[in-house]
Image (tube, rainbow, N blue to C red; front, top):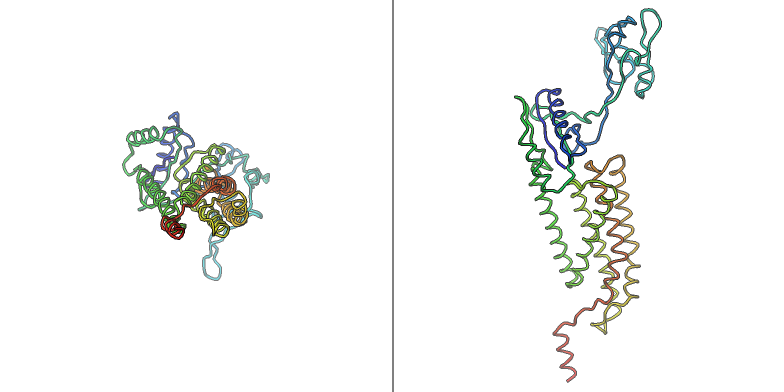
Length: 377
């Protein structure tokens, strides 16, 4: 997915430029889901605005002036539209007169609202105008006194081809004086390429810290490898979630992947620690004895409650994030990636990792083996 920032001092001019970019993008075969109604990176939720297009011939036929029409519409919608100044006690007070139920008026009810006429026979607003809705900005943003629109789109194809196509499209854009189009920043001031490098760096540092921390705590290469194995199991769930949802993996979803890594490692540490505890209690006199099936089963049962509790609480926290948002939006992508990875990580911790723990044998330290040999002699 790609985003472009359109700036200009005219709100209508910025909208026209964004619409022109949209029409050009839609002519590219692999481009999908072009959206010009994102005010900023963190304001991507779709919003709709009611539009009223008056029919001047119909208004003249019923003897309704533009002022009468405006006042009738203002009474039927909420907001400070069409306020009047009344003098009360020597002070001018702005007063807005509204019809009953104006705050909860639906689109159909607005069409059926009546406009009084000089003949005494009222007519409906829908008879003298076209009442409809269209997508609009959820918030209007300004930067350095310029209006901002974010044009986003998805490219269905290889990453290298997507990057070349986007760069070629950006190079072909020519803007009027006073307007500019540039790549939208991802995160806090990074361009898209830097943002990808930053995400990869964060992911790599997290994996390295996981391996080092587990190696220091468990003092075992095998235990560290088992904890590290929980990461690809969880990432497989992320891939499966986006495949089932038929959604495109975006950089927003990468934030969810980072969360998934932490949750999967937490579950792996819980299981490996329980297996180590069972082995220490069951084989104090036999240092080289491997873990048997009963010990692994008991360790899994001991930590099953905690692992399931972590999974349930994680998924419950994702519900408010995912409700009403699609996988192409910021919060929807994060929720889908985190939910898929959490479910797969839990299944891996409960079924796959116990099977791999079977037969785990800890090698005897050389010093201990030498001491045993001397004592035997």
